[in-house]
Image (cartoon, rainbow, N blue to C red):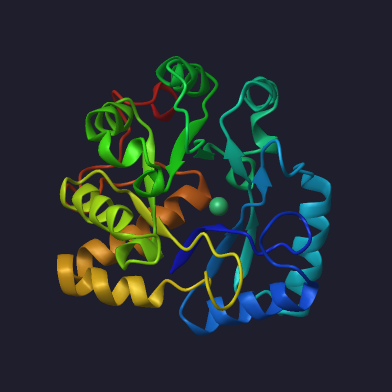
Length: 255
Ligand SMILES: [Fe+2]
């Protein structure tokens, strides 16, 4: 499986606190079936994002773990004014593996009214937003129409694996399943912060998804789509509406 969201780099945010914890997280990910994990340190007002430190630590961790799982570089991008300007100037600094997909996190209290315009500008710069865990956002978890219009405009939605159970509360859980059944979810990721409370595990999500939606849907959300995102390629549809990769209509840059 391919996990596109994790705080596995130590000492840069509220994720891993030591190099040893990072290594333990990576081992757990590998043991539970993750072949590829994307390191997404927070990039917001609280945590300064430094891609140089991130890349150094990725190299060190890859050496310590023998390259299993493979570690990819990105960030957990908060949609604020400064970040938006910087991303438009230098997208590869923030996107997954410097390619097209950008993990975008919203503030819990405020969804900018100009979000649609910001996404339009991102797409004009060949940046495709992957909205992280809308099911956990008190505003977005009930704004299905808005989420639907974003996905129609070409954004992708990532739900957190632990939201499939009640780790983030009943409303996040209900929202996650409603989004999945509506066919609005493109990818499930761990958003891991440690080895215990928020571990880098996708195996349990795979079990639950397989039971509830079938093995094909689980494969799409945990393997096929996240692998395409890491490779910077077009994704297939969402779980209940698998369709041809979006080569036309959605993104000018896929043509
Ligand atoms: Fe995160």
